[in-house]
Image: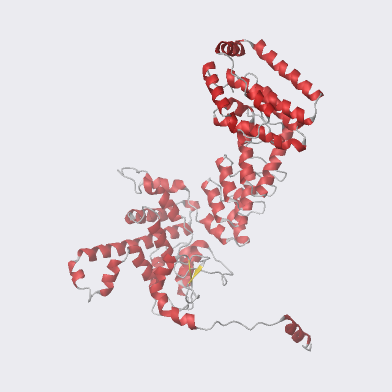
Length: 576
């Protein structure tokens, strides 16, 4: 690639600027300082050299031969230290000449010269390379991009024999295979910095294959490294590429890793969910097989962005879209939520920007999406249709709470009769989302086994209002709810949307929103757990009735049994 050639006067100004900054390079040997501290040539001589470098190829060849002759002399005689000093001196001389003349005629020889003195450097003199590193920083700071582009080592401030390549030269097949092996090793070690340096320094495609037909993206997905996956996707990696022996895709490996965020990244990059491996299993089925239920829910609840964009475009005779364009990203995030607890849905609706002010539009679009899922023909998705209906039902209830509060605010008589209508006055002071959440958490009793009456009736009403009565999912939920000792309506609805889950006895859930893995406990009783302070605050109006009692209850811990006593008891048993 040919770079713009500056006028000699501009090059001379840059060269003088570089000379003034030479004292800042501490530790440069005196020989190198003398080499580079020479006075600039007169302007007339500069003009002649600049003209000859451009218009006389013979001059360029003569210059190249002179430096090659000097290079052979250095190789034939001299100690290791002298060779290093001479190589660095030649390199600086030639670099200075290029800076002065603004000519890139001999840049290939600079690369050759740099590689030579790096490989010839004795091990006990490796620290002297730091002198050239300082010069490389000077070159890079003052914009001498020709030299920087010529020697890729300068771009990274280091001289490494394994990484010396020209930006204009593709690596050989042997070196390319070594680089590919190094890429896979860096991914296995989660070294994202080294991986970035390789892709910046060498022109390599991210879709390379190892001995098993796996790409770097598949390795990173299996490691569950979100940062490396994002970096490879930014480099243009094909998310569906792969030649694995058993037809596993990157999404399969992400599902096996158990990282739901990596699955989300791959799905956002258009990963195909319906691809099966050699045993006929999709990514979500493999995740379910190994117990990664978070990945299963993330894959099954994913909605392509195009399905949302459809409602941001006016259709037919419409003058405005059903959903504002500014809400597309927020709405997409809202419909892909995995936790379907009504309180969590309400909190997400409040926290995601823009949705709380457009409840009617959000509800309408959710109803249309539910209808669209049931009219796809062979691709009908009953689960997603019910999920959209469920979200629409929750949004409609929150919208009704808001309308009631607005009506109470406009009603002057309600303000005057605070004592007579205390419940309504209290509701008026609350945010609509908070009012809805407290209704969902309200119970006539306290304790772990307390039934949430309003939440139970609300969810049963939601199932009853589902308009598609002939579908399988509706019949399954009705059958489960009609049983005498049926589970809670929330568990039935959650199982219908996210699938059945086993071995959840030891799993900790938030008492407010049902989020799995709640990290915080009540500081007083240590009996209930929450996601954060917001969840604890919402649940306090119910928990405060039982908190004192729970804190005074003794913990029922089984007495510790020593191994020796247990062994003696086992030996004393008589076998009949």
